[in-house]
Image: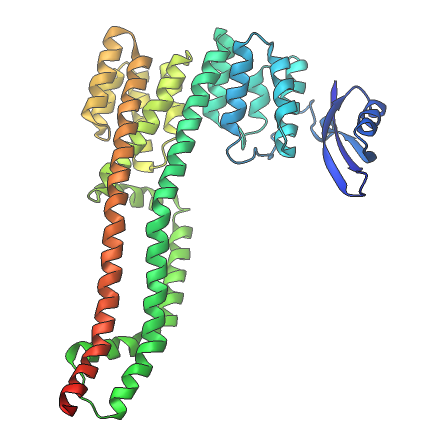
Length: 404
């Protein structure tokens, strides 16, 4: 069967589009009529992809969060004994997103042409990264594709959960800080000057804290917009500067030296690296190739460069644990577990155990940092508002005392 992209009208005259599998265009029209749809346009999906162009890459992406689901479905169906092409067909039927269907249908089409699944996935680099394509290739060659897909699904789900937890936990402090900045700025620019003007009209002597607040309010009112524009320009310049690899490397190296933040980055990147390396080695990917691929999941350039150096040392005959120890970015516990794995011949199991330990530490540290951020943010906002209130109330108390 081929895949066809269609546009149609339902009984209410509303336009409906989608992708359907059929033998011919005539078959497509019949299937649509059976669904009480009137076809208006039918186009063969494979016509959008030049199957004769071996090196052609597609920019189509999967819907956010759908990759782990697809990998998990394929793993489950393969474990149930279905051939790969049937597993893909079932996954296509369950998908309800246009781009996802296009990708899956193309994967199946390439598979029916005799290409491996890994090759088909390489045609969609924005949907399947090198970790996935390399692992799938190793799984196909070793004959345990279902196990490889299962480990990939677990890893992707775990990574997705960690990202969601991180953003969810950070959302409250970020909203609190931004709201407090907006409230305090509004008070300083609009409310404080009007209240202070009343005291000045009555020739009241202002306390020191009120005088400071008046001066600060005048400064914010005069230079606030300039400060905001300068800040925005600085952020844009910084983002543009990060496109330069040399500047980006120096910035990443600096972050590693910052207390608390540096240790957290090292632990998080180490966990990401060991988890990826464990998946690849368990998928029978050669260690040097696995190291090169694992380095690509590291975001910090300083650590990434160190791991690339490690891959070179291992290629030259050095042990993995000794090479990682010399770069100084990996926890001692991880080094010891890797060393034990090398000596006992169960490196992949020790890498996964090290990744489990580090990921728990990352979650614990992240939770601790965020649990500290929330009360600190509330305390800072409270102190700022308290100072503003005191600065406005003290003159009132003084005036009441004079009157009495």
